[in-house]
Image (cartoon, rainbow, N blue to C red; front, top):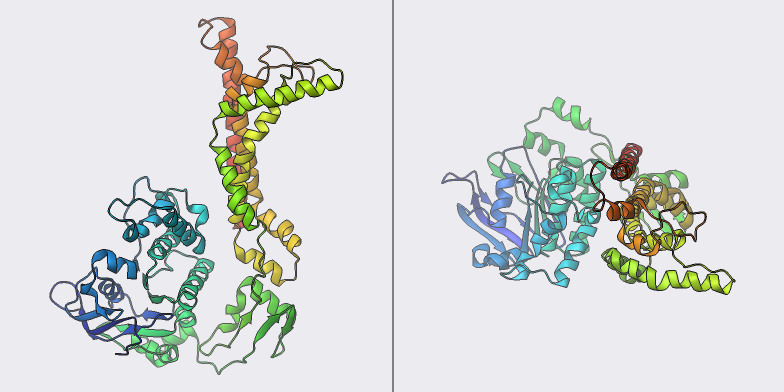
Length: 513
């Protein structure tokens, strides 16, 4: 075998028990290369991956990793060089997606398993790379199977391996999710230099991303083939035991090679060939529909190139590094602190401002409490809004730019409209907190049991009336009944807002399809 292979096998025999399922396996993958395993169900692709990962002991031969036998590595050392992603079937209890992905850092944390700041950043980077950052705080058991695939890939990436082994990573994903995941694999291999070995059933996608292919037959394994050799009609028919009629029913009859063209984008200027218009090429690139040009056995050759940095993020780095952590800090401040600040700063400022205009007021009232509430709920609304905007797929922005929209047209017509249901939910959640807040408002509103005639008049809130009156009134009295009625009213208001949140969520989901 070639010395260039980072991971390779020598006369490998695999299987369960003492009878080999496959033997005389001689394959290898280089760094920066994607090796695709294709073959029918039950042929042994998963068994081969488990053997390469060290989960199954070889029945013969050896697996070499970076020039050394796999058995020479300790468990942690092997985990730092090799990561395996298998379909997840076990149930985890009370585990967030961030914690699940963070398990990939165990080879670097030592026996105690304590994550450092660098480890946490590596987990966040991995989740962002796979498009799973919005899932970080959610229960791993409460997300879809497709979302779990993203988190599983993030866990494997957290190991920072040299070799990445993936068994059917596109399972449970829709077409868009499959394309996004395979694009990530290409980036990991071609830009970060990982050696990727992936088993796939989607032959069209395997053909697009594979740099090399290994065909796993029911009782044998081919050597390392080029995609052209592996996906030749006669080889595919032999691999899956297809008749010519069955092959053509799925893949269609063999077609002559189609036209070849290149689409360049350089400083806004496009070079087009083969009669395709600028609008057509832009639309194809925007929708990710270039695959429509690649159907049939002999696809056209398409190259789409765009200048770096065409997708401009709204928030600058300063905002992400300074503003967002500051907001997260404000979310965790107790309400009594906000009330104390309102009592000593806002109330005094309102009183002094009124005195400067010749008015005599105490400073306690609806205006002061409104300012305190606004400051309290702003971090909550802003944090949820940041997550909502970040959850808008980058493909939407890229498509908008490709169609000729400006930055602000994209923000207004694409990003904000796509995130509108989540933004409304953030506002309503903030208002719900404001309705239930008692302590901070109680300190600045004045606690006067009266109907206020203006914003600067003292008043009282439902929550403050309930907290002060419930413990002092005897059961069965009229005032006690009034307090229970107020509590019922507060509960009804909360239920209304919860129903509005669910309604907005359902409409947003229906709008996104």
